[in-house]
Amino acid sequence: MDMFGPARIKSLLLAGLAVILVCTVYLYWTPTTASSTVSVVPSTAFEVPLPERQKDFWKIFRPIIERHKPSGPAPGKKGDAGSVHFNPADARPLPDLTTMSEADQKAMTEAHANFVEEVKKAGTSLKPVHTPGKRGVVSTAGAQYLPVFVSSLRMLRRAGSTLPVEVYMKDTGEYEKRVCNDILPALDARCLVLGDVVGKNILEHYQLKVFALLFSSFEDIVWMDADCFPLGKPEELLDSEPFTSSGLVTWPDFWASSVSPLYYKISRQEQPPMAARQSSEAGVFLVSKKTHLVSLLLAAYYNFYGPSHYFRLLTQGGPGEGDKETFLQAAMAVGAPFYAVSEKVQAIGHWVGPDKLSGSAMAQSDPREDYALTSKDKWRVKDASVAPAPHILFIHANYPKFNPGDNVFGLGWETTPTLKQDGSDGRAWTAPEETIRRFGYDAEKAYWEEIKSVTCHHETVFKSWANKDGLCRKVESYWGNVFAHPHKDDPKFTQDH
Image 1 (cartoon, one colour):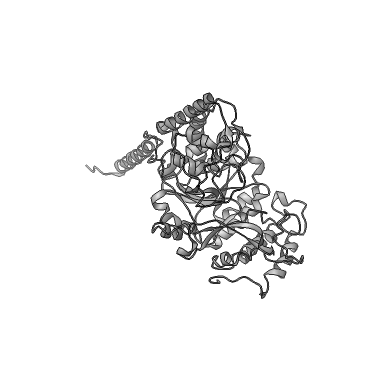
Image 2 (image 1 turned 60 degrees about the vertical axis):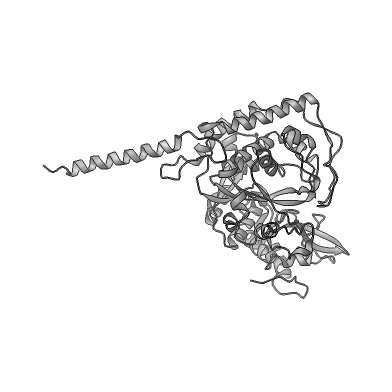
């Protein structure tokens, strides 16, 4: 008798498929812990769709956040921290400008500790949503930020990056079908709506960032604000020090830390000296959810209660108050590793008078080069003569946004980035000259090439550009005056390409 006839073979194949399906489901639902080494959804053909994973995660995580709400009133204030530039020799204590009763301090300390304990012990119910090993860029954008994001995305691709991109919008009102269905997919990017997961009017502006990170399908993430772009491939950073050993890399702001001493009491940390490091600038950073899940969950807690409590405690009214300090401070609070780039952020713009810079962007350095120096105890932030400055790797074109539909031209902003002193069209970024040379190529010309392409191909697409006629014509005129031909005062770069 033929033991392996067609019917028998068919039965064996079906049985084999059933075993594979059962194993896949088992792998997904096997209990895990929400720790720094948590296991996550396997990347298989049977992977649960991302929206379902997001909603399941939020269904469990939101009650945990709400169970540990700070019970007292918002912290009081004796004043606001000023715009104090970072000085590594500064021996002053941290500013102490926030007040809170002993009872409220105790209640907030307990809530903080209980939140951390619960997320660490949450188990399989708080399964993170990302796919193991998946890498990508995450950002948020909507309304007037969407055209800016598309130009930044094109700069990412121009740099040679092949990382997939997820851009999160606050709600369906910011979702633009033609952009999200046609323009972005051609650039390997997709739109996701946070409101579809968390509900309407739950999160605002600065609170969006950390939840976009948590809800992203990526495990290793390059975060870039919509107005930030790289001058090289950011994925190379994910395979290099300091990211490979720390899992979290942050870049500095101009300012000294203004974290309240009360925060360190509440989070049960030793208070660092003022000179330990600059405050953070969260326009760009790198994070691994494999090693920093608990850090991100705590950062989400800080952001959820940011407007009422934690933004004040972490910045005390200092420049850029919002989510900027929540990521590094959360990592410190749970004892997770991090690397804070030491090389100072550089304002870039053009001179409008003796020693007067009209700044319109921030330039951040290559962390690999910074790490190579600091690991040899060479700190340029303390003594610039110890080594040449690292190359610039990220540009955060933050003020104003380089949006042709939003007064980037003319006198709409105090920095007037596109005008020379005589009122004629000019470059935005020509100074400081030593910083511009660190670009390695004419990044501003490249940026305007992408802005021109976005404007002239999609002038009628973006909602925020509705009824704004002549944007392409305006950009082409500016391009022709500034970039079409060389000028004797064009800046110099380390290398042109």
